[in-house]
Amino acid sequence: MSTRIVIVSDTHCREWEEVSSSIRCAVSEADIAIHCGDFTHMNVLEGFVNQSNQCIVVHGNSDPPDLRQAIPYIETVEIEKVHIGVTHPAWGGPPFDVEELLNDFAQPMDVIVFGHV
Image (cartoon, rainbow, N blue to C red; front, side):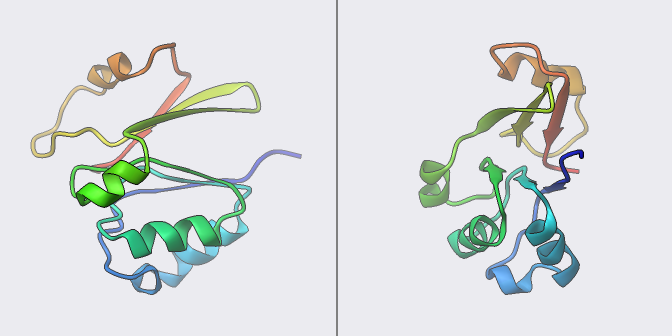
């Protein structure tokens, strides 16, 4: 049986209940929920963590200082022998080469998921 993963980013809400009900449902049903940053409020982070069975979270450029101090900028996880890097590039704005993200990780990643899109 394979692991069911849901990947979310840039929720930009004030309250967890403001996040789309389909996203909240997917988070609760997934084996692992990944959020690639820009929760924007601690309440949304807490809702995400509490609703998920297991979660991986990183902060984004729109997250306030208290949230940035509570969770990392990058995270790595191995799921079914696949190395996954999770990040939310600190810069926003114009498109960038995804290869720029490779330098954020100490070891090679098979997959990188990130915010801003």
